[in-house]
Length: 252
View 1 (spheres, rainbow, N blue to C red):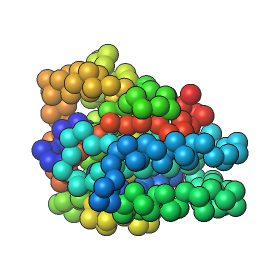
View 2 (view 1 turned 90 degrees about the vertical axis):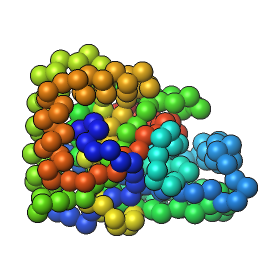
View 3 (view 1 turned 90 degrees about the horizontal axis):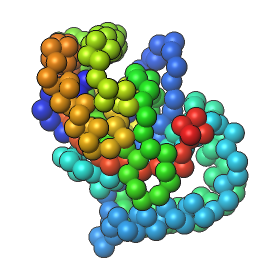
């Protein structure tokens, strides 16, 4: 589902999630306060990483930031926290508070600016290969699509279109697409409430993003997949540089 529609993430669906593998993603879509910038964000991250948070028992636990590359979404950065399920998320929150880290970091986060927060459920589409570094070097180029249903469509239609997309990618035989990683995003609590579902795709670098885009746009299968999505949804897109703060153990 690349280039579904011309347009430009983020928040996440009070919905019934069907029986399939899901992860939990907390998102904070933020704008800097006056006088604050990306360097202040990195300084806050460095402070957070210097704190003793204890060993994570959840292999899916991790955190990241996205900085805008091409975006009309109006956010200066996105902060994400991953867990394998809601109970693991709750245990992580409890540990953050009981360790005293919340008392230390709360004022620092607040000083950076204002955020819209949400809890979201993610469904895997395709597992790819992206970076695993915890530094200031980009680990992924992330494309996001926030979408609304049209023509009476629902999530069953989205999943059918997604399955069709996967068959077209397999037929395409693109070497670049072997690294492409993608999930469906389903809002659970919070967020802006102005979209029904989202697609998040990640490439390891900008060149891979360009190669997958060209392969997709040149293929009949890509056009057919886009037509499926366009018939059931209207989407806004954005492009980000992604950086791990804490890489999940299952990504290492």
